[in-house]
Structure formats: C-alpha cells, structure tokens
Image (tube, rainbow, N blue to C red; front, top):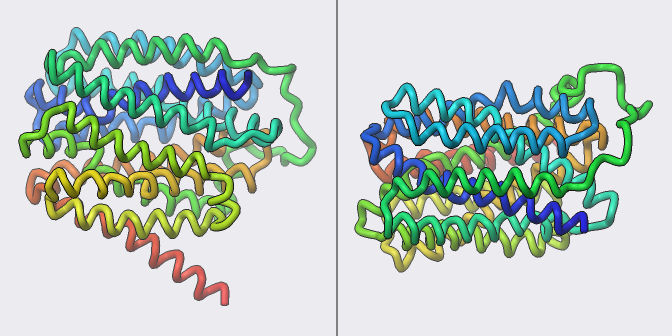
Length: 378
C-alpha cells in the first residue's frame, strides 16, 4: 500500500509538471511576453525555492509530519494557480508565478525524501515507484498537447489548476507518521541545513548534477515554441516530450542493477556525456525524423543525473535529515537552472537553436571536473 500511495502522489506532481513545463511558455507567448520575459517568468520562481524550499523542508523534518506539510502546500498551490485566470501583463504574471513556486516547489523534494526513506526501510525499488511520475508526465504531455491543439493555449490553465487539485487529493492518502520524531544521537546539535552544507563531497556532487540539470534550460523554455515554429502541431510537440520521458522510465525500471553496476559517479559521467551529445545535435535543428531518437537521450541527461543525486543523498545523509538534504539538492539545481534560464532568453533571441551549443558546454564542464578529481585522487 505504501508504494501505491506514493506512486499516486508522484503521478499528481508530474501531472502538473508535464503540463506546466512544456505548455506554460506557450501561454506566456500568447499573452505577448518576449523571449527574455518568458525566461524571467520561468526562472524567478525556480530561484525562489532556493530560500523557501529548504526552510519548509527543515520545518517538515522537525515536526515529523511531512504528509501534513505536503497537503497544505498542494492546497495552497491549487488556489494560487487559479489567480492566473485574472492577471495580465509581465509583472502581474511574474508575481503570481513566484507565489505559486513558494507553495509548489517543496512538494517534490518532500516526496523524494518520503520515497527514499520508505523504500530503504521496506526494501522497495525507488525507481519503480518514481516511474509512475514519469508515466503521468507522459500522459500530461499527450493529453495537454491534444487539448491545446483543439482549444488553444488558454486551455492549459484549467488543466494545470486541475492537476494541482489532484495532487492535493492524493497527498491526503499518504500514511500518517508513526509517532513523534525522535532525534538520533548520531545527529550533531547543529542546524539541519548546515550539517549538509558543510560536507564538500556531497555539495560538489550535487552541484555537478545541478549543472547537468541546468543544461536543459533552453529545452524547457523554448523547445515547444521552436518546434511549433517549424510547423509541428502541439500534439506532436507533446509526443516529443513524451518520448524523452519514456526513456527516463526505462532507466528507472532498471535503476537498481544500473546503479549497482555504475555507482552514483558513473551515472553522473554518463549523464554529462549524453548532455554534450544531445544538445550538440539539437542545435542543428534536426528534422522530426531525427528528433525522436535524440529525445531518447533525455532518459540519460535528466534521469541518470537525478538518480545519481538522490541515491548519493540516501547513502551519505542521516535518515533524519533526508528531507532537508533532498530539498537542498533541488535548491542547488534550482540555482543553476534559474541562472541559466536568465541567460537563455537573450541567447535564444539572438542565436535561436544555436543556444543549445552553450548547453552542451555544461556537460563538457562536468566531465572536466570529474576528470580533474580522478587525477587528484591518484
């Protein structure tokens, strides 16, 4: 029952992400926002979680009732998403998007902490639980593309609000905590966040994983607009996004043997290599025939980097601090993604798909750092 309930929560969360990420930029474009303004609206909310998400996660760790916190956040996000129906203009939309981020951003890292802790305690396969989020993402891509192709991009807003409502409902089904949280004697009397921030080995690894995640910035912001500009329907665009997540699902299904064979650093290296290849090819504006196999690399550029980071935390962080650590992980990636998004708007406006070449450089940078670490260790 634990795996089923958690799978439903992942499904709700990624229903939101699968609608918001590919289709919200199209709604912003329809509202008359420029490429830099779209990048700003998408980046500032991500940047906001750097401050708010770790604080909320630390609070959840201390009160010992993550389900209560997650349900409150999902309810608040549902209500906030409805405000988009009544606002116009760059500043107003930006403010609502920032408020929505405060409530919605912590939900996923809190879910990751529940999943990793519960999977370790019950002997479950985290990847096979997490894949239901990816399946939901695919459904959102395809259904969202179909609905928006028929009714226009404005139809995305009620879909997003409904997805937040579903997320709230499924969080209510998570098991209640078994009792008051007891601090282990193994945890020093420092602040939760500082214990993790003071570990350079963990922080460097999460930073490298975050840089790989940041290489997706141009893709997240402008792939829908670019592909639509090439004459592809929104349904085709949704299918392209879905193919990437299908590849991610395959990795999650086999995550346990893959992780056992490669380890967390091996996954990180493969993700960086895939980023170099994927974004270099995408910069060439390939035809639809080639885009589908290129999208398969998403299973590695996103999936392998994600698995590497969350499993490193599970291996090296005390269970009492897992929620805080996972949220710090998301905050670190948020720093890199938001800063990259700020730059991606002007880059895309100036160079179009050539901006992907800069993204491929992120993967190369990670490979150089890992190689330097290997040389120092000899």
